[in-house]
Length: 416
Image 1 (tube, helix red, strand yellow):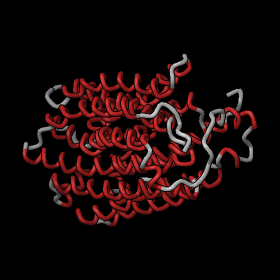
Image 2 (tube, helix red, strand yellow; image 1 turned 30 degrees about the vertical axis):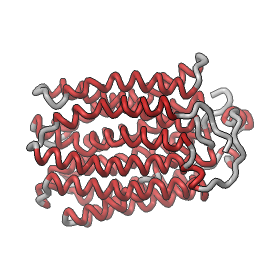
Image 3 (cartoon, helix red, strand yellow; image 1 turned 90 degrees about the horizontal axis):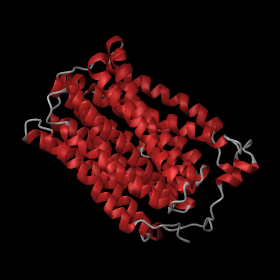
Image 4 (cartoon, one colour; image 1 turned 180 degrees about the vertical axis):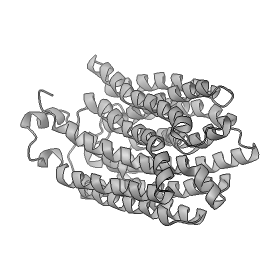
């Protein structure tokens, strides 16, 4: 803080954007029992609704990542949040599964800008030693959004109904747009940032900022190191987000009230917040003790993967709180993993192509998420809603991804 704190204000803006992003996403999972009953959705209808979100998400990731690098994070992110807020409000007009599929596709297309914009902002505003902590903080917004949704949504549903819930979420996006438009600047353009803070942020040697073709980015080893690893693990969080409320409701007959469904979800997502920030602190501590940045991320991610193994207990236990404990630890470790894998891609990617590389990896992960929703829907259909196979598959994904990163991740920024 002695050299300035402007960068933390920029981080706060992307933290709140991520929170809104996940309020919009998590709401569908919480409202699923009500919407399924009102519109006679089957498990495959719900899977298809989430599938079309992932289709839009995949397309949006690669397009908006490229736009952010070319046009600038401020303008692209402003337009994206405006459009996703309108798409969220449009859910309140849908009357069928098909209508929700259309709305979710548009929502995915526009919400895909969130993480390329957040990662780009972090890459621009933070040095390597602080990136994992900063990433953990803004990514904690996912858990804050997913946590506040089951806390507040039952009251809104009871008083105003599900249509009003979607319109209220759209209004929150409008409030954020005002602050982003007025407060966000890149470091070199910020009217009040100190020279000392700029020097601290830009202490690493960077390659020349010059236009790079998309084909050049696809030839970079780091692009594929990140893309495959992220594709293997990102769908796990979407599994929790979309299917955890239906799982808890089916397994333990919780309903959707704050005291029944809300408390377990709140505990799970609070733990995820601690994991998100804690994972960033861990690798930052290792870097401050002299360990190379990429190696510090790999060591931290190995510890995370080991913590996730216990999630296999969740599907087989009849004790609610044992399942909540296992899922909490696994989701906290997942968020710590995510803070480090995102920081790692920043460690070996030049800042002028950061959003494009991340957007391509995000597109690959979204495609993985598309298949994940179909696999989950199919498994639950043929096994009469048995989640055991799904929870058993989760830990293996992290160890496969970690092995891939160990051999493929570059150890420094290439001079492209």
